[in-house]
Length: 157
Image (cartoon, rainbow, N blue to C red):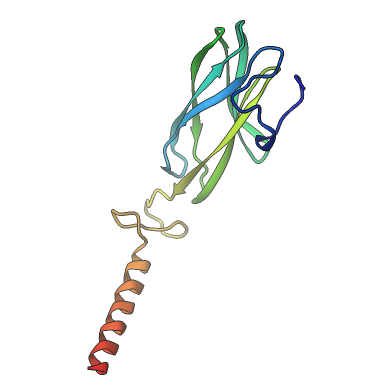
């Protein structure tokens, strides 16, 4: 029913609710990897399928805390692009953010970003990666495994 919050499993599909339209996040552009503590932007495109202009707020949150938001009016049956600036966490790791476009009809999605340490002096914490993004420890382990396999093959001959 119109006004009810629907989960992704209960989506309207391609059909809008009987009273008019949808607000829908149609794309998210964000880096997949950033350096800890650095600034980056997320671009969110939202579609308004209502037959009237709608004021929509796009917010990005993590752990229930809104980190950035922007409000715009989206013309009837059109899209609008929102650009939000964020600061990456200071701890390395993988973070999943909630993006929500809301007015009376809402839509939400998530995106995941990998935060890597800046690798600056002082040592401690973080992970060093090769140009391909593979930690050196993994490369060493792979080389050891290859040597062991080659030795086994030589012994079997």
